[in-house]
Length: 248
Figure 1 (cartoon, rainbow, N blue to C red):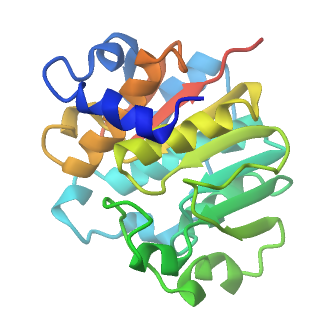
Figure 2: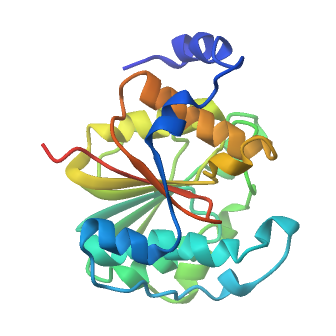
């Protein structure tokens, strides 16, 4: 496994020119979630049980971005019917609620960094929101959803011990080293043919927003180090990259 110290040196040499050669080569742009259904021969439509996807709070929410995000995640979850699903980056738990709605029989584990690690600077820089402990996961606790297990851990040092993962949704710290590390450490725990999804992934917006650029660079480095191999799918206007593990 590549150490974070070694990774920092590697990344420092990758910030100049040709940033996304591997992603450019492997990315497949889709018009709607129905294209995703066609590719994988799926028939179930996503359950969009997440009311905040219709909110418009920021200019970045144009083109129904939140709806496209929900469709991306829910379509995968709904159709693969996972036994074990992992979310990295719980926040208020709305995405976790969406996962549970589309996989009510799954065991869903959601990991969020403890607030004290954020306040002490151990949680990276590009974190969407730093919530207090009682607010993390509040949405699924309000609904008393029984198939969700909440974990407080800094993924820089956390070791997955939840069994074989069918689908993972990575939306924690968006620093490149965290995206790389979070993905790398779960690869050996993923089910062959399972799915990894990254939030804040949109190659067209990588030049506009630092956090999206950082996420895309993390995924690019995983391809360059041959930890990922194969196509990555992206539904137009979403901020979600979708990757299927090799079916060994």
